[in-house]
Length: 101
Image (tube, rainbow, N blue to C red; front, side, top):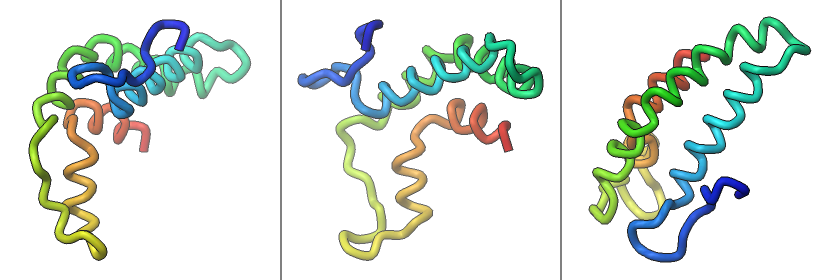
C-alpha cells in the first residue's frame, strides 16, 4: 500500500491479481534478506530474483486475458482444471512459484 500497489477502481488499473503478484514479490524479498533462518533465506533468494527480473513478463501474461470470457465448465459445478487455468493466467509466475515445491 505504501508503494501504491493497491487495486484500482477503473479499467486498466492494477487489479487484485496484480496486487497479489507484488505481495508475493515483497514477501520473497523480505524472506531473502532476513538473517534469522539461513534455509529460508537460501530458498527465497532465487525466487525474489526471478520475480523481480520477470515482473514485466508476468504482468503482460496476466493482462493478456483481461476482459475475455473464460469457460470454467459451468456456474455451480465448475471444472477445477478449467478454473485453475483461468485463475493462474501467468505461466511465468506459476513456474516460479511451483519451483518452491
